[in-house]
Length: 374
Image (cartoon, rainbow, N blue to C red):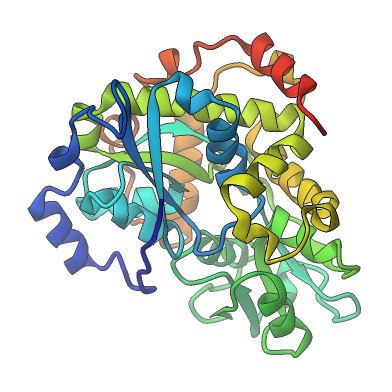
């Protein structure tokens, strides 16, 4: 069963956050493990995107569902869609969802405003954002963006603080020297770039892969060293949910990380699982006409979420985020204007679930993926 949650750009305003904090939010009202079947617990997942695609919802949730990883954990997971990470965090804060893989910027901003959301497991560990322009436009470096318009997915997405930080890293004033315009992703973003509505785009890796597979070419500006080690999508829950549904959240994370490993080994089989769970991805087309491109897009996303080096059998420490990574992430968010002060890391980050969440048979998941139909 899938629902839709749409929240405007200013969703997590100070007043809205204060209201969420005052009412307690969380999932305490539905903390019972009684699910849709005997011994089955229900978990509500907020997808931090209004449009389903070959990305985290496929690699973690869809694969975990179709390959039986959720069933093994006795979980019945429901999903809602949101208009980005800010709205996804609001869903978690209000109790509309138990957990969401939301951008770290939204989690940090919410925490600073007093919303008791907690990061409980990492997901994307390799910085996925890039600034791109059309070839021949004379934009060769970040400094060339002065006075330009940068297209972001929305002002509530992780692309907005990234664009601001990218400009600031080049010595520009992100509030005065560049303009950020919401352009979405896909053909909508491309149209804005090609028509001159914007001069550059700030999108994630697989969004560009999608466009490049249609024959489009881009020039990419280099990210500075400040973006090394910055975290992006991170699983977040409400403090109440962590207390009342700790076991269920641990099992959900374990199933999700199994799904991610499976996807790293066999992205084509993972994409087919995605079609079964989210047939809307096909947009009425036949799977056979889409599988090659969609697999390439999914694979580009998976590369952001698994170690940059090594083979799947060597992947360990699922969901771990070091204190150094959190510090670098917070510094980045401060420089981009997302937060104004250092976060209380002890309140923001709880890694107590990860030992159990990562306790699964890697070899068995890899074997299952290798034997799956491609």
